[in-house]
Length: 277
Image (spheres, rainbow, N blue to C red):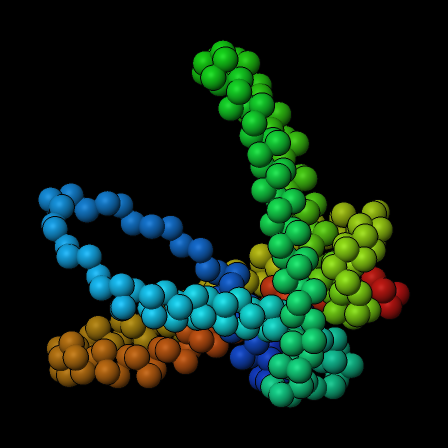
């Protein structure tokens, strides 16, 4: 499998099949999400009256509904992209309506695979970090603790990467073959046997593809931002912002959508190439 050819194919699909942009947008946000919190403020605590229970409860339900809706959209979009890329490789197309139908049909199994993957990662981290933490408590920051940490990293990184590859192939098997979660995971394990090198190549291709799209987006966005900043002397800050938002927001959304399509397409192309060969 050629890494550059895979990236070029994924870019071609992203450019030629704009009906996938909506699904790529949600997958892209899921790929780039998870920012950290800022530091605590140094201000003195201010007494704030507790909110009324009649306001908190509706807001909590609304927040929960929004979170559930975003999660559903994420997995619907994942399934739609997997099916859409398969059709795109046959020079067929997937409409937005068909994408929602296909994505919804596989939403449940993709969610279950994600939950199982999360649990496996969590258990793995606990088992790997536990001996290192115990060594630190018993022996302090000495050679024993260092060796325990080094062993956890040496064993943990390849294992966690393997779990990631395992999940990526299991998702495609579940969609293409209409398998249940555990069945898809078992078949993905068999598929991955002897193909770890393929998975690592796809991991590199996904990273390089996302990097290329991000750099291209910056190359387009930075000069526009500089022009808007320079024009603020003429239009004022409010005028520059009013001009910049409708100019840059579409570019931002397109970049995120293409990132989502890239991260999904690379794995689908790699899997189908192996299956069809």
